[in-house]
Structure formats: C-alpha cells, structure tokens
Image 1: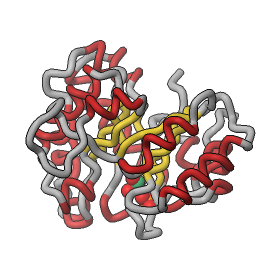
Image 2: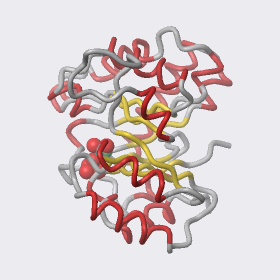
Image 3: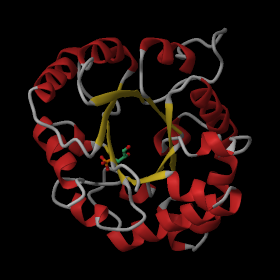
Image 4: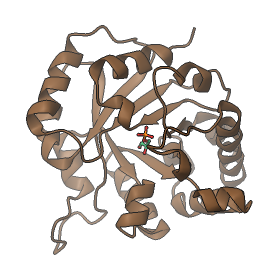
Length: 252
Ligand SMILES: O=C[C@H](O)COP(=O)(O)O
C-alpha cells in the first residue's frame, strides 16, 4: 500500500512574510495522518520554512537544485546545501524549468542521483505538450523521459523516487486531464518502471498527477488505482485549499 503524497509547488509566488504566515497557520490545523504532505517553495524561503515546520507532520521542498556540490555556478543552489538545510524534497525537471531554463533529461538524471545520494526525495516531473498529446507521440516521450531520468538509479534507490505526471496543457490552465486519462498515463509510467526494474519497484514508486488539481477534483484522481497523490500549483497557495486537498487524498 503506497502512502498518498500531496505536495504544493508555490513556484515564484509569496513573499517570505506570506510564506511564514502560511506555515504558522498550517501548524494550527489538524492534518490527516495517512497523507504525506509537503510545501515546495522558493529558495529564499526555505531556511525559515524548515525551521518553522520542525515537529510538524509536513515537509518542506525546493523547486530545483544543482547536482554539483559546489563550484562556479552563479545563481544556483546545490542539492547538497539543500540537504544540509534539512529540506525533504526537491522538484526536478518541472516542465517550466525544462521550457524556460533549458533543463535537459541528462541534467534531470544527475539531479536525481544527487538527491538520492543526499537523502532528499526527488520529485521528478514528466509530461507532454498539447501538440505531443494531439499527434500521438506522448507515450514515447514519457517513456523516454522516464528511462533517461532513472539512468544509473539502482533498484533500491528507485523506490524512493516520486514521479509527477504533469501534462503541460493542464498546468495552470484550469483544463485538467480526466481522471481516467491521468490514470492511464500513471499506469503507463508504472509499466515503464516495471520494464526498467521489476514489479516490486513499479509497485513501490509513488506517482502523482499534476495539472489544475483542486479541492473539488482531488477525490476523483485519488480514486484511481495508479494515482498516489498530486503536485499542486495554484490550489496550494491558500491554507484552506491545501488542507482540503489533504483531506480529499485520505484513503476512505
Ligand atoms: O507543479 C505543479 C503544476 O505545475 C501544476 O500547477 P497548477 O496546479 O497550478 O495547474
């Protein structure tokens, strides 16, 4: 039985004051114990959020990280330093980073390997554009993204990776994938992992859906067999909505 996992991805939203206010409010809420929860936030908020979330049931994640431990990489933050800070998750290969910051499959793979080495949970995003969905090439694209992401990842390490299936056309558009379409792709990812590793890895890896998930539709997704959670942008910015997402992800 895989533990459901809901992660907020704040992207480039919130000032530090707003971020701390959110965490302080979240700490006062009763959160379902059966759902793993985390907030991924901009780098400059992480130190305060990690301190502010000590002795709570939710974790804190980064939205990116560099695979080198240190070096001349102006403007970057290493996964090693995120681990040192006590960050629990790092989002890797989000479509916005692939699209606007030229993040390649090779860089994604190096980041996953580094996160695993440093005991930070890698949340690896894969997903197709609207064009790729419509021309039918989406399965081969996702298969290739998964194969390249997991290159040199051992069987033991693979089970610790979280995969987020995020069709680009569903991100921030209000146009979510149907729960059946989302599940079909999560199942396809699981089958790809099976062919790369074995049944036990395929059954252990948690696969999230992301793209216009909100309190109103979370239950539909969570009712699907191969969807283990959600990576949520817009609807993770308000405490009430985030808590409602966690409630909706509980196993009934
Ligand atoms: O990482 C989160 C995704 O990009 C989804 O964003 P969204 O929930 O605002 O559509």
